[in-house]
Structures are given as structure tokens and as C-alpha cells.
Length: 115
Length: 111
Image 1 (tube, rainbow over the protein chains, first blue to last red):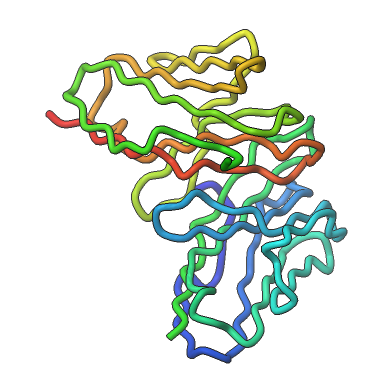
Image 2 (cartoon, chains in turn red, green; image 1 turned 180 degrees about the vertical axis):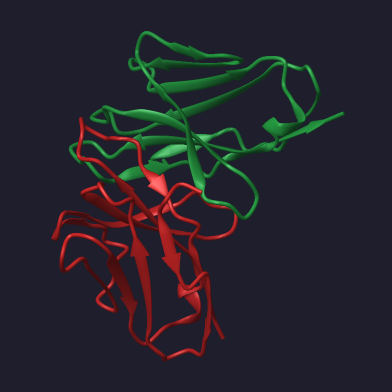
């Protein structure tokens, strides 16, 4: 257990519904990252925050995806109008802002299934 | 060309074997390099960072060749508990947060 928690662990939804995932980072970590992982692939970067500022977004992050970290602590990732292609494991990670690319500690992930 | 490419695997080896994983990356601006380990249905965990001078941590040795944009991981005296997927990871050039993961190489150590 790295100390990063994610909720829910599993989510099954119907196509077209909206879903929201929550990530609680390690308490002293000021950076928070979201990744998506599909079967047989490595995680793919979606976005990251330093404190409450969203510093970078991948072009993978379509308009249907939005992430927030309003108080610089927990973060939410919302997917609107879900599609079957959104089915994946959504991983959150956190780190301290030290050096160029500090060690990122991953949470257990939220597995999304879109029917 | 994929940004991070790894041996496809899987690698099936007996206990005690030495196994080597190779990885190449395409972005010459990448500055940070890592090997992560991911157990089945678990989150990735940092195994080790990789430095230009090479580094060793017990049975694990990582090497980086910036000129060839090549990273390697050597596992000596492999244990059953080493069975996992090994992910080669680099940071996107110019980014402090965007890690680019390879697809991973699955290792299975058999008794």
C-alpha cells in the first residue's frame, strides 16, 4: 500500500453515462498525476497537477474528460458521455516536486467498464 | 516509431537464471529514466531509477546509453518473486510530470 487511495475501485456504467473518480494522494505530496492503462499496454499519461494548478494535459484527454484538484489535495477525474473505448484502468499517482521527474507512487486504480 | 519500445516477451526462465531486458526510447530530450515493476492486477511500483553511470541494487543492474537511446535491466539469480511485468519508463522531453511507459515485458520465473 503506497498511501495513494482511489475510489471507487471498480465502476460499471452504461454508454453515455457520466462517471467521476476520486484520488487521494500521499498527504505531503504536491504533485498528482492521472494515467490510463488498457490490457497489455503500459500506463498512458493523461494530466498532472502541481498543488491546484493543472500543468499539463495529454492530447489523449478529450473534451469529455476533465480533472480537478480544487484545494491541492484530492483530485477528481470526470468522464462525460462514456464510450466503450473508455473502458480501462484509471491510475492516479502522486509525488513531491523534487528534481526533473521524481518518483511517482501509484494508487490501486479504478477499473472502468463501459457496457 | 513508438516512444518507448521493449522486448515483447514473455520471458520464461528457471530460478537462478540471469535475464536481461532491453528498451529503446525515441525522444533524445528525455532526461529521466526508470524501471517500474507491475504485478498482475496491481499498480506499477518503482524498481529503480537509471543513471548514465549505471547503477546496481542487489541483484538488479540498470544501464543507460544516451547515445544509443538504450536502457537495460539485468536480473541475476532470479527468484520466483521476480515474476512480474517490467516497464521501461522515460520522462517526455521538457516535461516534469509526463512519464512515458513502454508496454512492458512479462517475466515468469519457474521452480
